[in-house]
Image (cartoon, rainbow, N blue to C red):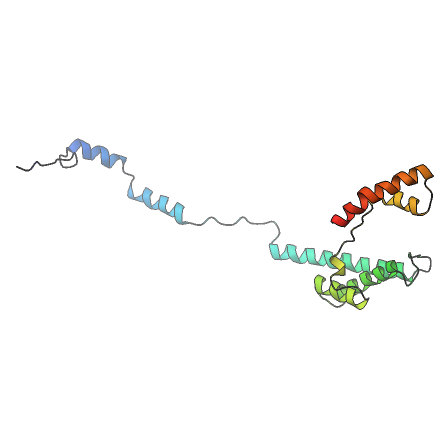
Length: 175
């Protein structure tokens, strides 16, 4: 004869149903909880809208660039400005490249990167010159300057020469 399996749920008492129904939340409360889960939180309200802040930052940047352009034009035109290497030296060409970049950005309404590439090319520099940094191999440039101008004492100069050959030059070549 097969054995019947009885579960507790099959044998129900009135008292069990009352307890279970009391624990169940009411219908209104269930809908409210579901709404809380499904409603997306609002974004916080900013004091200044993003577009207005972006426009204000752009105007501020443009005004700064205009001021810098005026200053660099004055610097280049002054007769008392002495560039290293003279008017045809590297420092003069760098100042002119900066001026042409600023003219392209301020007056020509070009973006920064294409303007810097165009300005560098117009003065004979490589297209990527603006973003490149010069790697100096001298760890102490002032001491190197004194060494090349023969301002160091002979013993100190010999010691520095050994330091240059053994440490600074190989370290600079690693970069």
